[in-house]
Length: 246
Ligand SMILES: C[S@@+](CC[C@H](N)C(=O)[O-])C[C@H]1O[C@@H](n2cnc3c(N)ncnc32)[C@H](O)[C@@H]1O
Figure 1 (cartoon, rainbow, N blue to C red):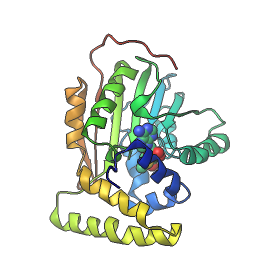
Figure 2 (tube, protein in one colour; figure 1 turned 90 degrees about the vertical axis):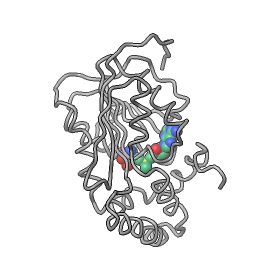
Figure 3 (tube, rainbow, N blue to C red; figure 1 turned 90 degrees about the horizontal axis):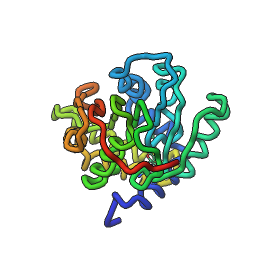
């Protein structure tokens, strides 16, 4: 594949992985992913207010529980472009969230979300499949859809700085996971790709800088010796924007 960042390619990858994603995600992070999905919301203050939240690249709704824990009365909108991942998300909304989650199948890079609408933007484990230009679009879109004063938080699996940990993690994600992937999936290629993306991604520092350049206030954060990294922050200045409608 020449362009692993081609949205159609990425969508196909997640469509094919959807049936095993949740289990594999747990295994790939040594079970840390559940903890990380709650930790990455630590920068938000708990509130009972009826706030507007959007979870970008929501997958099957893995972050919803921690979001609802932190922001119990939030209106939760979620977005993903993989119809297969969203099948599971819709089921989860029906079975566990009273069918109240607003689920949008859209490409975030070409979305129809309203401007200045959201109090919070969340996104877990979705950064690695974007290249620099796509991250720039993402940053501008986050700025556009957030209200002034609105907050955001992103987290992604990363390559730790520590050489020993990096080698161990690389071996685990690059070699062990594709084997487990083949046992669960019948084809290890998709899970090999996840390591390729992580390897290219490194950590969230570059993405953090792109968000800062886009005019957002950001703070870089590292989780468990850099095995995951992310950034959080706020839209502090209003912008004049053409209003989009949903
Ligand atoms: C690694 S999964 C993360 C899922 C979930 N947030 C979690 O915590 O596990 C990344 C998700 O991003 C979605 N995605 C990737 N690029 C996208 C894009 N340009 N627009 C919308 N969704 C996208 C994929 O379909 C996939 O479901």
